[in-house]
Length: 140
Image (tube, rainbow, N blue to C red; front, side):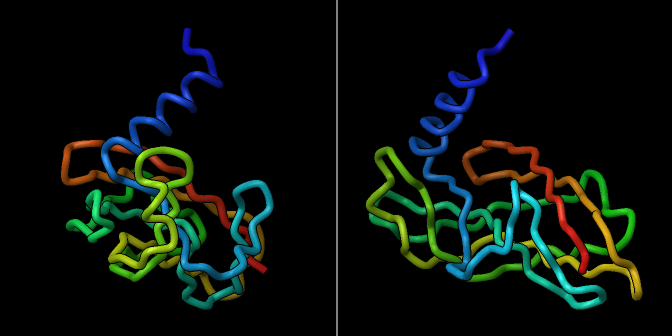
């Protein structure tokens, strides 16, 4: 049985060693415990994006993504968008804040819908690393 704290540390170290990271666009997130707030019916790029850089902080081909569970009350478009790297502690920390091409998710709710929604995606990095991500949104 995995130990939660050790699992997180191991995942962080693996991400740092491979150069893949979760990024942000530098805007205030409007997130509460991982939930992003979006306007009803308005296409909105979510804060969490995915990229890879080499040791010299040069962007490497962005990861590929696929929806594994689409949202129930909206739609999602996968796109390429520039974002700031956020590696945190580890050997790639010197790349924090560098801009690069990233995999981004644009969510649009159904017209008139207000409330929670979510979707899941599989992210595949060039080196073969695969991540399964869940995105939660609150439509206002």
